[in-house]
Image 1 (cartoon, helix red, strand yellow):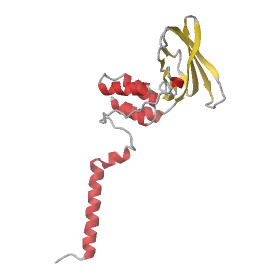
Image 2 (cartoon, helix red, strand yellow; image 1 turned 60 degrees about the horizontal axis):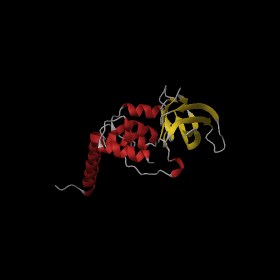
Image 3 (tube, one colour; image 1 turned 90 degrees about the horizontal axis):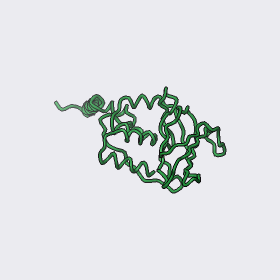
Image 4 (tube, one colour; image 1 turned 180 degrees about the horizontal axis):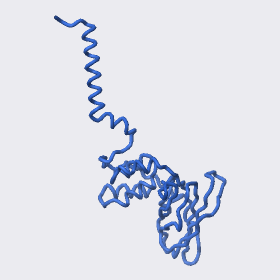
Length: 205
């Protein structure tokens, strides 16, 4: 005969539970455990916005936080900036400080180079840094830029990156706020129009 209302309700609950279990087994489990991160199959590029202001128009990177990669607690990346017209050389000074507004800090690097980039003479440990850029033009030195950055040890981020490739690495870093690292990753990928769009937008931030 026809099932009672209580039995019909029980059957509906059982069927709904079974459907939820299927969703969990066939993809939902991975989606929920991902916590909003990017998986290796996600090849899209992050959306970007041009944010550059005149205050630091000569400086490219690093800005904000940068990921310590040398032994997971040191950073040994490149400092880069836009070239100044007729500049014969550039002087770069880096001070380590406590992150406060009034602490000039302790000088840790002072280098003079002829081009618009500097490879650090030795890795920087985790901490807050201020970098100052000066250009010498026709024998006269003038200030070009002041920027702040922070070297951060984040072993969990390094572990997540191990499972990602290509633009997925860029997107993961971008979403997590590691913008300087995302730009470095993008520059290491093969050329294409989306890569160029992303690099151009990030260099104009």
